[in-house]
Image 1 (cartoon, rainbow, N blue to C red):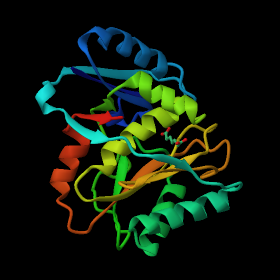
Image 2 (image 1 turned 60 degrees about the vertical axis):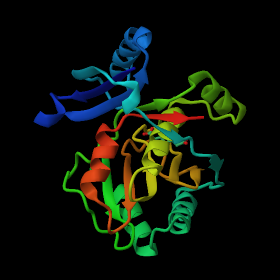
Image 3 (image 1 turned 90 degrees about the horizontal axis):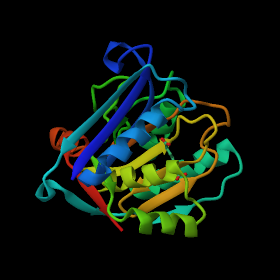
Length: 248
Ligand code: PML
């Protein structure tokens, strides 16, 4: 299998201050590498966040024995008709997953006050709400994951009426994250100005929440709430480097 990863920025490379435009992650057999890279390139040049002028695509072989399998999270959708309701649902879902009320409020506040979208995720203590990573505006990017049986997966999403690229990618990522060492819950909403549904995920499931932000707002991000005694190095290694196939 091959890990194929793309990141695109505007105004130069990410490392040199370029603005993050889009990213994508796949784990595919050799015969699908070419179509995967060309789809990623196309996507980098047609993102709602703007026109990329830096695109980095990495193709890397992975031994099958190094791939970990994790279960696909079960999906449900909450009811919310306005942003205040959406955020209230998110707060309750985080608390139900084991995050303290202080931590949940702090996480929502941090995402709401981002000056721009983050490429990766923030790590927050699930009890105190204190930020535990030192990656600043960059965050920790989750990498090297995919779904095991794509057609079956897509069929399931079609059945549930949620077959869009946001859900597909977020559900795979959230399934990898939820299986990580020390993870209590995840909160996320998209940087796509036209996509306002976010989610709270935890090992018990993936709750889609409409109206996490106002329509037209192009700032999104992710927060991983973790147990205070988590081995941060082991968690970062898992999120960034462990190849994962999500089993359906
Ligand atoms: C993203 O696109 O970065 C986040 C997508 C959130 C998807 C929420 C959903 O509809 O399930």
